[in-house]
Structures are given as C-alpha cells and as structure tokens.
Image (cartoon, rainbow, N blue to C red):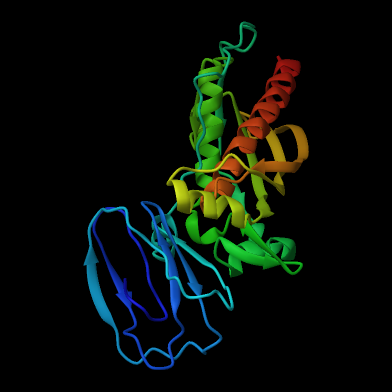
Length: 293
C-alpha cells in the first residue's frame, strides 16, 4: 500500500501515478477491489501539494487493506477503471437492444423508400444544456452530487441518433427501405434538429461502495430526469415539398433510474429512454406518411 495524496487500483495492467509519502501527508485508508479504489484521509493533516511522482505498473489482483488508524475525517473519492478511462475522454456509444422490436404487419407503406437526413445539432445554443458541455460525468447540481451524460463522452450524438432511427425503422419493416442522407433516391425524407439529449441523476455513495466491496454493479435506483427533444421535424416528398411540419417532439422521463455505482449508468439510462422516444417518434412518422398515400 502506498501512502500519499493519490492512489488508484486498476483492473488488468495499467500505469498509475502516486505521490510519495511526506511528513505532512494525511494517512489513508484504502479498500482495493477488482473495480474501484476508495480513498479516505484518516487525519486532519492537510494534503500536501505534489512534489514528485512515482509511476507503478499494477497487474490484475484483488487486495484488501484497511488502516487501523481511527477515522477522524472522511472524504471519499471513488476512482474506478471506467473513471480512469473517462479522463481520457472514453466515448460512450448511443445504441440500444433491437431484438425485441416488433415488425409492422401493416403493408401499407411497403413500397415506399424513406430517407432520414442527419439531424442538425443545436443543443449548445440552449443554456439549460450547458452543464453537459462544461462538466465531466460527476458534477454538482443545486448543491448535490449528480451523474450527467457529459458531452465529453459522446462522439457526434446527432449522427448516432440519426443512424439509430434508420436502424429501428428498418427492423420495424414498415417501409420498403429506409436510408440515411440519400434523399434524391427516396420517396420521402425527414429532417430535424436535436435540441435535447439531457440526462441527470443523483449520485449514490452506497452504490459506489457496493461496487467497491463486491466488484459487482448495484441494483440501487436514484432519482433522475432524462429529456430528449428533436425540433423542426419535417417530412418532404421527392419534389422537396414539405408535406408535414411535425414541429417539436419532446419527451421528459422523471423518476427513479438505475444507479449501478459506475459512471456509465447515466449513459445507459439515456439510451434506454432513447429507445422509448424513437419508438414513439416512428409511430408518428408512419401515421403521417400513411395519410399522404
């Protein structure tokens, strides 16, 4: 066990950086597991500024170390392998399971080729989204520790959502074919603007501790909110004439969300609600185009 102001357990092989002990360094209690490390300063001594560092290579292991020193002060830091990766801007994929999507038995649209143009992305223009663009996954909101679907871990979300709409529609099989960004070859095409992909939920220390002590994710639920909104939805025909101005389709999901004690749970929850959102949006699209035929 290394004393000092930093310590990280990693699963598999990775390099970690720690500060060497100094006279004024706080004593640490650390619980090491296969997923996370929990660091607790055990005294009121100030943590010194790093002067020099040591780099260690740690292999896969499970080690428990508990300092018997009486706990005087606790500031717990949860650092898991995923959190380490998050500092390197690990990208989280926007996707969901499609095996349970039911095929449409109505063949009324089966001769139509539909194109989905890639969504424009104007989320940055809405100040209420700013928390997602200025923070990491762990943030403070109204004085509380929360998890957010930080933009740091997305890569071109509007593009990914557009692809998921196409994929979902093709599995649903209502249309002859659904393509992306090929409006010249389609009977109808759809445009829109992504204005909300917002996820926030309360951080749970108990879930993080559960992961730390068992190595397994928690089943705990914490209160949260997910908002998804696409604006300026329009359906065009092959002559570039607007056939239907759907406008804005917005859904808000509030309540208890799964909190597994890992940073990615908020992204998983957003993906889950995105599936519900796209399913409802597709129902609207099918009904509107059916009226045109």
